[in-house]
Image 1: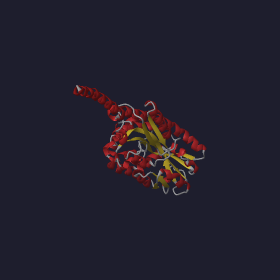
Image 2 (image 1 turned 90 degrees about the vertical axis):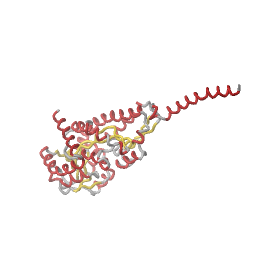
Image 3 (image 1 turned 120 degrees about the horizontal axis):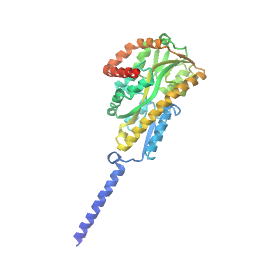
Length: 346
């Protein structure tokens, strides 16, 4: 009798334990069982909250928290609070941070092909850039990120870079000669400016204002929204609309974090990054137009650069782009230029 009761108790208890075990797996094993878990996502960028990228990051936070019913919370950090683009990217790789949105330039050290976006005078309009970034070329480059412990969810917009300086207007290629210009630590940019006769001086973005103010460098180059938000008009009297390089942002997620997410959570992240990216691009274009007017009102002397002069500049730096096309992959560069030509015919 006792043995029968014991067997009955085990028979009743065992299914109950399996059911409880199954519930436990569902609760903690988001990547295996699906569902949305309570999560905190630390997201940092180098620019300030007022910049279109900062506003885009705020939109991303809103979307993620709304789509997850408040379970997935995003903590935003601006103005390089968590470090510069390079440091934050490394933090993602180490699993210490979940999201950052750097320009593509810092990625060149690990994935050389991203250097094609540093080529001068490739794009004439934002739409031409979108056709490459959102098309085959851009998507193929995103696929190279996971082997470097990163996941790319798309491209946002930094925009066309223009030159400011404290010496004189830059209207021709000859006007670059002798100018000491802060650039990113980027071999294509460095070689291109040297070819134009300037003296490029790489330094961290957070150090630029002080360097301009103290005349350590004569000038710098950045998109209009960044020039305005960084208040470079206070230390730079001349703004030349060179539009020499179009720079994208790339939305990065730590692969270590990404792999812990359920399919549902991954979809929330991807959809939110892309939806916020469209918002950010639209805002960036509008802000660039407004920034130009505001910089003029602030007293900056603004000059356009003619298409003919841009063509001369392009010819001067052609040996540089030819050199790096071989390094980054001639087929990839040819494919990019083919996409640009298609976009121009639309």
